[in-house]
Image (cartoon, rainbow, N blue to C red; front, side):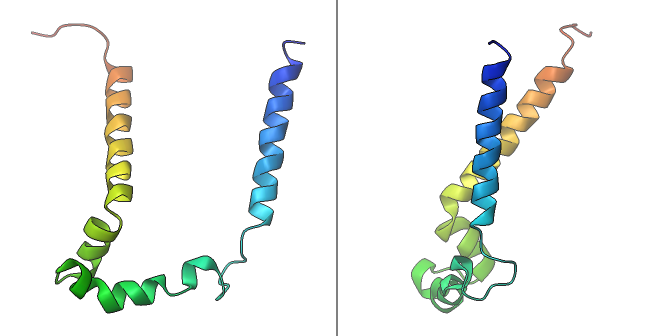
Amino acid sequence: MKKVLPVLVLAAIGMLLVLTVAEMPTFGDGQAPAHRGVMDKYLRDSAQDTGAINTIAAIILDYRAYDTLGEATVLFVAVLAVSAALYQGEHHA
């Protein structure tokens, strides 16, 4: 029984992932949610909404600030994890 439960959980997760991928829009679909005007709004309104001259900076630092903060946090934690894994516990003089 101890080995059956993890296999069932992994099978359920695998099935959920397969069903999720099956519902994704096809590659290059012009009607996909990612192509429904978000880019046009960013290009049209970024200077007025944010006051930034650079559109890329406006998108990264204003429109997607929390996402960028999350990515930076993930990178920081990854560096800490690698550092902790490589640390031998020896003190070097």
